[in-house]
Amino acid sequence: MEETTRIPIKNIRIGFLTYGMHSTITGIGRYTIELTYALKARYPLDIVLISPYPDSPLSWYRDFPVYPVPTLRRLPSVLAFGSAMLSKAAHQLDLDILHDPCGIAPFFGRWPDRVRRIVTIHDAIPLHHPQYQPWLTRFVFGQVLPRMRDRTDAVITDSENARQDLLRELGYRPDQVAVTYPGVHMPSTEELQQWQAEGEATRRQWGIPSPYFLFVSAVSPRKNVPRLLEAFAQVKHIAPTVGLVLVGPSTPEMSSRISQMGDLGQSIFTLGYVDEPSLHRLYANAEAVVYPSLYEGFGLPALEAMAHGTPVITSNTSSLPEVMGNVGWLVDPTDMTALAQAMLAVLQNPQQRDQARVEGRQRAEAFSWQSTAAATWDVYQKVLANNASPPSRSGVPSRSAKTRR
Image 1 (tube, rainbow, N blue to C red):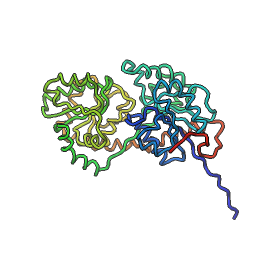
Image 2: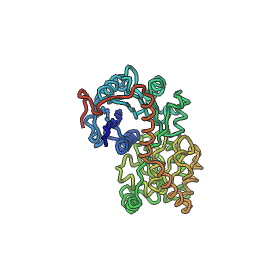
Image 3: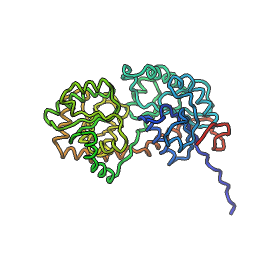
Image 4: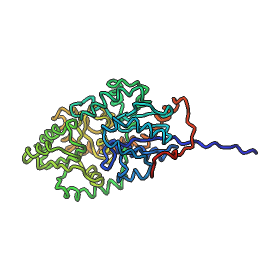
């Protein structure tokens, strides 16, 4: 029987801009890292990190080829030089897709015809709360993103609520914007039991009482922490031994506010950044996570809490009902009495609290990084199918590409 010659399938080549992802990783950085690993594990593609940080200590940069662009360390430089430098990188690296997960879309100027351009815009926060945003962020949303509509092959966002905001506020076409929900790592039962067993030592480390409520996020006006403090004051009148733990970067104004609360302030603990093992233990031993944000593109702390089997009290606004489904407590974030009542319900109703723990774990299982990668892969396939001239290449970087491992 005559042997048929097999033509090898060439991997799709994707370049990821990693602006802002140096050493301290925020939500966008975590999304990008998890997505690249999940894509690499499952799909026939080659990923190159187009990085302003050749000196980064992150092991991530050792796990993928890196194309250094140190000029693009700051947002003004990305806006001024990013388009030209990324276009050059796309040409030298023989990319099929340039994916900007940072929500900037520096796609001005001339690009290779075959390169598809994708931007992840995680939320529409600068459109809803511009008064809390730096002027450069307002410039990106007010000037850059609207002008890049016709130069962007696809937009990815984190929730259907954010998608509707982007369609309405920035004028993207409905077929241009896709939702890919972020994922979460599900702790095993054994891990949860270990973290719970370590809870007492963790509380002693910071002097935290039991029970305690937990808030995880940077303190900013949008996160609605002042109302959380007022709701907590109502709870303390009925449950005087309860504490409140704030994890994430705070502000001098918030520290001053807490110090002015007298004895009540002694039950509020601002920990700042904590390491990952400590965060797991704080999640696993909290009575509930309280997250009364005024607006979220997704709301990762709520999902992380559910993955840890921790009840969640959060807002009935923006994307948070999408994340929560019918699990936990959804309240008006401007109603401090409703927020306090939900916190008391967690303390006073063990059966309802235990039900929220079980249902939260079940709900969190629907959000995996494998699912995020699958939805992103679908977007890649769609934009490549619209490319009139499919690529023909060797599948390895050209010799002129400045890559390293």
